[in-house]
Amino acid sequence: MAREIKPTPTLRGEEAVEFWKKMANFKQSLAEKGITRESVRKNAMLLKSIFKDDVENGIR
Image (cartoon, rainbow, N blue to C red):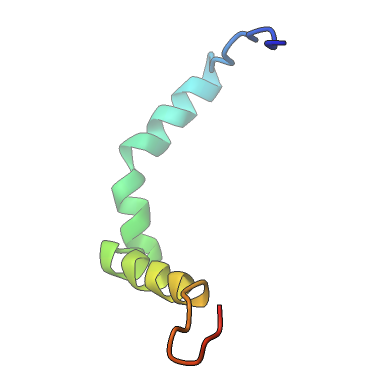
């Protein structure tokens, strides 16, 4: 059976203001932490290599 649809939580008051401040400074905070597209791509490839099949050695 289907589950009941619950109301979507919403931010109000100061929570909403803080959220929009974080969103406005999102790219700046990534830059401060040294997170770039290239670093994310590199880490993703490393993670993906863990799960890659090793065809030459017959390891799966």
